[in-house]
Image (cartoon, rainbow, N blue to C red):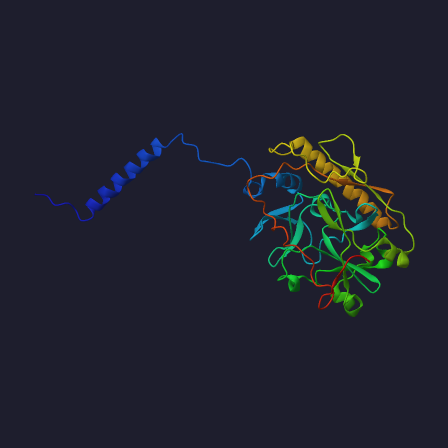
Length: 333
């Protein structure tokens, strides 16, 4: 009787296993792996917010931040940059101080949703449905006006370089050349400490917003300035602009298509955003008063979906302390 060479049985078992695997592989030929036709970041947004992904995807990254979901992080210098600084304030009779951005993503990030500060990513933006002149808190301290994005939490205030507030002299608030006069808490110290929060609220079409410091208070420091007419345009949807001074278009149409904006519509939004930023940049570089009329971009969002949006719950946004130790709210200045 012949005896198998030691190890031969193991080799035979291995060969049989490989043969079985090869046959299984052949049987699986023709199966198509499951793939998704769109990026996971876009799928992670509520359907009504995907228009922002499509329009802004070349302007930055969409990153995941708990508990907000996917948020937008613009392509900027994260060490020195902060929201609501590259642009100017336009005084509108209807909306009060309206932010006009010189950044191509500004049409969305300063008029819809909220900014928040993440300890790892820095400043990021979470989308929202309602158009507003600017989603900021205001304060007045001495000869300065201050503004801060409506933050969602208070535990990151100390992480923000220079503090959450941006200040400018009241005498320059109505001018387009703000950049050279901006300051932060760390820059001015006592000059911008102990401010009083401005609570100059107004409601239009069910949207509540803060008009900011009264024009009269600013005119005492700056002198009289003309009011600016805000004209809303909706690229890819309406051929002509409409004046939001007489007919605000902040609320989306109830019957908007849930599939989102067409590629041609998205491209028209991008072109309009680039042109708007270019015009604002020219005004910021030139200085002087704002023009008599300014166009702002609005977009019709589909109705809310069953999927919960990644934004913070209502009532969770608010103002950081005004100066050192905070201050009491007031109705107007």
